[in-house]
Image (cartoon, rainbow, N blue to C red; front, side, top):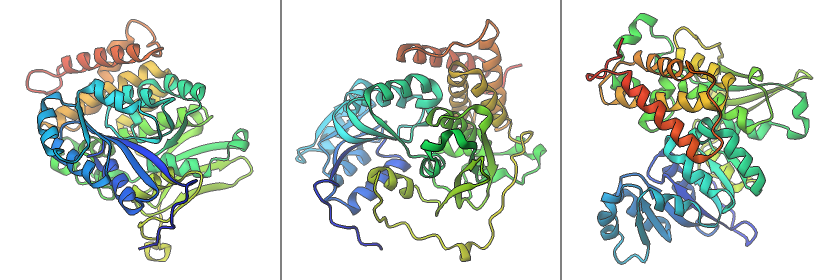
Length: 403
């Protein structure tokens, strides 16, 4: 295990972690525990797992722990008894925690629920390490505009966007021809298309490379995750939609590439371990050692690449179309997808119904005219809620797609 260099006053940082009990939160906490002299923790938040939140808050010596579910406040308070750690509950309390001043806010809440806290962190945090892709998908222009105005640096945590961040030469942005996001292809890359209708929850949750939460794992199986990442990249980098593409790379060694007009193709490679991009964000603009093992290319042996099969993965096509339409369409896309994925995870609808629900919701909401980009948080949440309602109405009482 690499030795972590002693912290200096210049290196020391304070952080908060939104979504501390998820996979990104767990990886971040691993990095904190490996470097406690440099990284101090102000706040941790979680959705419903009060016991785990209290455990992690004690481990890292957090000042505040917030559970989004107000019914779990008593459980959290009891679990923190005698620790000196403050407890709070409710979604407003999560937003308030996000607004506390720190050096870096790690935004790792899954879904549109992360939008309000991420916006609240702008101006309060010097930098936001953004793992909540829905913030950019639902209100990318609003969020990035607010961050630029406040001078808050946005550091991408997703392995793909973090890879691009490392090889994207902003001073040569005009010379960039293409930004390429890689995809493992998920568990159904080689499955016959007609067999996709038989996919079960358990099958879809067996990702071949990454260990992630259920929602993101299903998005990876449908390739919606790559579609959402294209939308993220559009907001993170000064590129046009036709400069963004997806390349299937089953080994998950190359995480992102940038092609320049002079013929150069720059790539970031590494083990499929989220501690690498998180560690980069927590050390930026420097680099510090982590416990992630070094990539051995000789052991990997072969790297392969192929174009995504858009007939097999219609969610990617829907996301690409929504990106071209603008922030209103991408907000609707995300809301409908969250509803459809939740129904699939609960066994109320089929795997191949997910893109059907998304497409019908988009078509229904676009029928009265172009979907306007949300100009405020309230507008984004209103659009999100309307899309969710329409998506739910597209499922009958058994959860199957209504005709």
